[in-house]
Length: 246
View 1: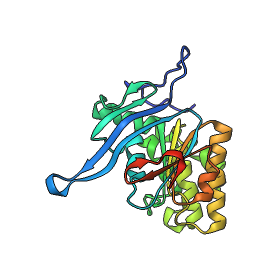
View 2 (view 1 turned 90 degrees about the vertical axis):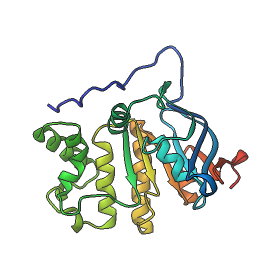
View 3 (view 1 turned 180 degrees about the horizontal axis):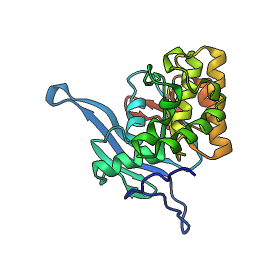
View 4 (view 1 turned 90 degrees about the horizontal axis):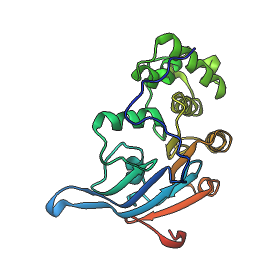
């Protein structure tokens, strides 16, 4: 029996009366610097993301696409604008509740693997449950289950540094899945992989969206990957381009 994750002020809710976007942002801006050094990374983004969407955010370097994803993933806060998750204001959340929302509801897969290279694969996958206070026995059981899903159970005791690039990314996907998230954010998830391994990782992420209903938000330069998502938005100079123009 796996220990339940600790409850928070931002627990899951079933909304029956009216359909509502899972994520909704209005007139979102993000400004860095001060005075003559101001840089406007986002200049007024309006975006609704529904549960079960697979959304590709596309744009050139410096367009604002990663900034947008970091805000949607609660890794950063907007300068102005509204941000709702399940019709509740994220802007008003205290730091602790924001951390709980991110840790309990979101999973992350990045181009850089961000693993503890000297730790075992099992420990890397189980880390989110350790942070959440789940017992060692329960998080080990859950981590082995997830590693089985990504076909890496036989690597559980290996050190992360000894894996190939494709294996490391599958470990990251396993780590993203261990808390049973509603949303997976993937920032250039195939950027460091060869074409064959990249296609395997793409399929794994898209299958999670289609078979488990996990909302998938991908930042990518790859038009082929973007076309496999159900929706695409193009960011240029901090704004969503109308009509899908780059």
